[in-house]
Image (tube, rainbow, N blue to C red; front, side):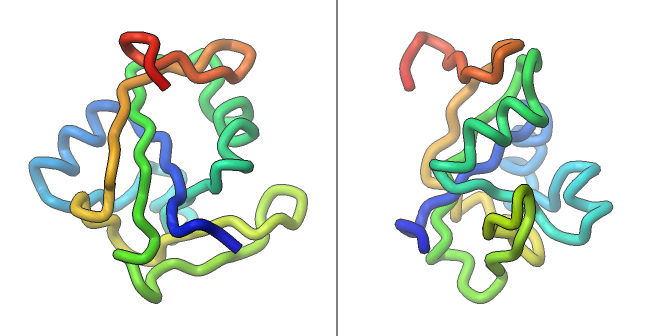
Amino acid sequence: MNDGVAFKIIDAAEWRRALAEGTYDGSEVDLADGFIHLSTAEQLPGTAEKHYAGRSDLMLLDVDLTALGDTVLWEPSRGGALFPHIHGPLPTRAVTRARACSVSPSGQFVFEGGAA
């Protein structure tokens, strides 16, 4: 169902706090829903366009799902597709890459320095 990696878009300030604390508890939406929303590589463009279009000062996190064990559940979401959700905090040690970015009004990622 996946290659062991999923993605999370978060505010840069939230990521700085998570690094200081060692865990990320989720955004306001995540906290309200009771789990941390992630996306697969295929789902990521739709998530960026739907929830982050026109926003800057963001981070794109690559999350190692194998490091999270059974806290990850694949649950139906947008259009009935199965999305990875973390039921519990995200330890920052499970993040294998963090890239500063913004999302254009059309939903395209723009990475600092132009690197993808």
